[in-house]
Image (cartoon, rainbow, N blue to C red):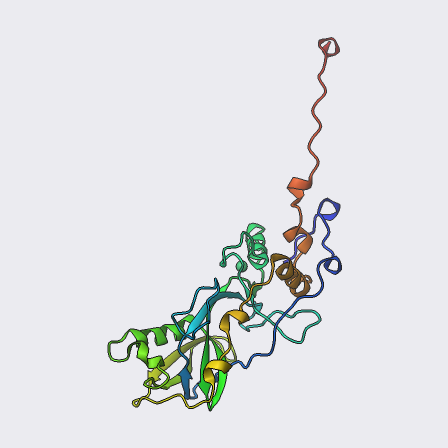
Length: 267
Ligand SMILES: [Zn+2]
């Protein structure tokens, strides 16, 4: 896969000289699903004071973002962060409106150089929501297919957005099924999400106060931090000097102007 780095013409990147300490965040109780098991969940309504990725007040129960996982062979992997026990996803900086995202840059570099990255570098949409399961609060990172199913319920005339109402709303039965693909973690999943027949009140005490502020989970890294994480995680697989450095073409010294040859010299 690797192409030869262009040597001295390319600016060397020394991860140690880049900023060292990256602030990662805190523990989150992630809701995890196994295939084929029905779960009774209660999705919390959008809460007062909760915002989306751009700081706008939420009017849906989830926060949408485009995440870069570090995927290889169908397995979703988060990024390791040196000096931290927590792993993180990287929210795509270009999706947020920043001029550059280091993961997208790496992906484009592979494309331009006709290299199969072997990692899935494209960002994927994810919908983070607060939910109650078995009397406790969890954060679920739902894929678009699952969030779409919940959206459909809120758009049906029978249920509408009152499905999230803390007193008159309903629990949902959620089930994930593996459909085709290789065995193990790979392959596609389909989701069935059905409101329970009876409405019910949220019983958990102080659920509003305890709910995770979802936008906090997708606080973007600075470009510099995200670049360092990419270098630390994938530096062994790609010539990062070339990916992020000055391209060899630009670094090449300009040819010297040709000396004028005098008419005399031509003879
Ligand atoms: Zn990106």
